[in-house]
Amino acid sequence: MQINSTIHLSEKEHAVVRAAEAIVFGELIDVAVSPGNETQVEINQSQAEFIKVLRSTKETFFNSVVVHNGVPVQAEILGELHGIKYKKKIRFS
Image (cartoon, rainbow, N blue to C red):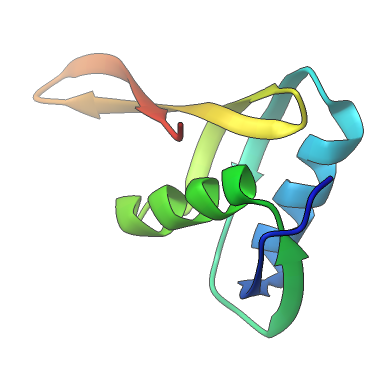
């Protein structure tokens, strides 16, 4: 992994980044991301883009996060609006 920047991440954000690196290809299920104690972490450009988009969504729970080559690329959120169930997809890259 080429390090491109240092950023402050919450424990949950850091856990998602580490889990994605560990599984490389697949899905993270029932991912809760919340603000909290932050720590300084070195990450690559793809991970930094993921964190930027993640924070801009203001979402704190994702039903699934698709991981490709160790980086989260898409998340799904299940919900209901006016009695209609939906699945919202958020792309990170």
